[in-house]
Length: 201
Image (cartoon, rainbow, N blue to C red; front, side):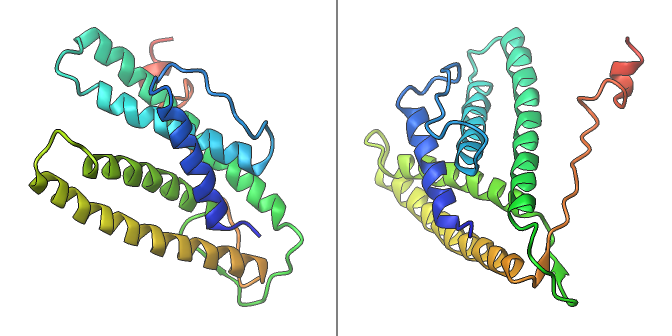
């Protein structure tokens, strides 16, 4: 059974590993190898973590317009990579539960399990960086108190989202919920579907 506890552990490890270097250009070394659930989860969060910091960098007032354009294109590619990894996770989960016999009343979830994991990955980043704000020594207590309140809300979300994911995994394993995966069908990066791209070929 896939548990949220494992996913949080891997996401947190990815975030901590990134911050050992804190460099968006650092070449990631996946400690879980490749082609297994842990490796995909680690890579997914690493992409999210790099993109988080690219979003910070692009808002630096000292960044030039040319640099902004370059970073925005990189973020655009990162968004596609994130989607690809979510779909890879969905494929893994579908295969994992392929032999489950569905109940006649099995229901669909509003989103796939992998998109729940995407939300958990981003939430892990929010928690890490909000906790950083709470621990800052260069701000006043009011700032810390406000960030502590936000952190407590994020931790409450963590509890609820983890429980929801674990319940979804249980229901799928019992045949009470069925898996149906929709591809994102993103059009803006496709040279055959984005009119700006195909009209300028």
